[in-house]
Image 1 (cartoon, rainbow, N blue to C red):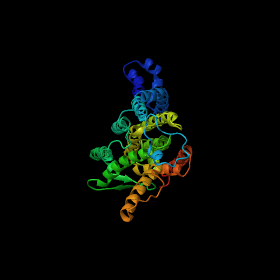
Image 2 (cartoon, helix red, strand yellow; image 1 turned 90 degrees about the vertical axis):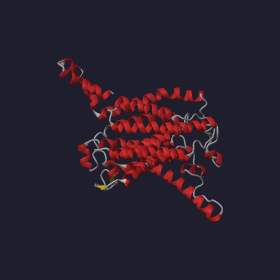
Image 3 (cartoon, rainbow, N blue to C red; image 1 turned 45 degrees about the horizontal axis):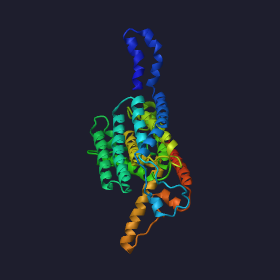
Image 4 (spheres, helix red, strand yellow; image 1 turned 60 degrees about the vertical axis):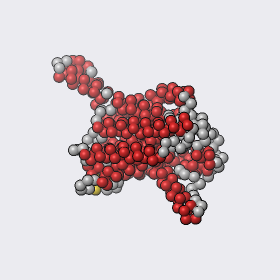
Length: 385
């Protein structure tokens, strides 16, 4: 919305009000993506600080608290965990989603990229909200069936991939792949099944990987912030033709507005982390984790960088792989030997380190460090080609 203020001075000049137009010339600052990016981040942070206590209080009044022991506590062996998670309000992702949507609408210039991103946030947040609601009202940690969640995520990913492939000017986002450390594009002829598959997997995989990482105070949101900082840089470069050509990355017209979106994500994430850091006053729940993870996948696809997301989100990838390894090995050994065996003491990986005696704050801080290292590696792909 604020972008359109920048058009007011010129409109006044064109309609014979040059003096008034000059007087309001300061409004032209709203046309600059850098200014709106900063404004979005600050606005989202302030809104989260203001809304946080109100939403936490509301969740407590509605008894939307986790009264059952989480999987790690139920398994036992967490002597280093001195504070139980029981009773802490969940569904705090509502705060992030509300602030993200509102801030984006205020500061970004509307285009189809924003429409796809906001649609993804709303759909996945609604899915996560329903899952949280089932868990909290029935006090059942299983929630809705995983097949239902996967089906909805796959449908969303396929819809976005199909939309881009059928779009007259956006089909390259699906029809061609950009690989890190390589300056060219890998093109596919005919119906880009590979492109559709990569698009869908990027969205579904990212959504579930962030969801799996959401198990310790501040862990998922902190790692999400690190990845989003990376994509602030990538979206800005992708939307700037001169910089994109210089760094040999695909120029995507309109992608610059995703920089504002990412900044709003950072502001909302920092505001939420204020209340989610150890000991957490609120959890984001699936409402936040599914939405944030999924929209990171969407943004990566929209700027032609799904594989950069794999690098930048290395912590999420490791967490997801640890679950796949644990589950696969357990099923294999149970079928082969009659008794299931484990590779890790517990999966996802952050619980493995908890059971080894690391304090929760130690795990989170060390995963942050890993996240920063992966972020630096992702940024290095801009020059190493």
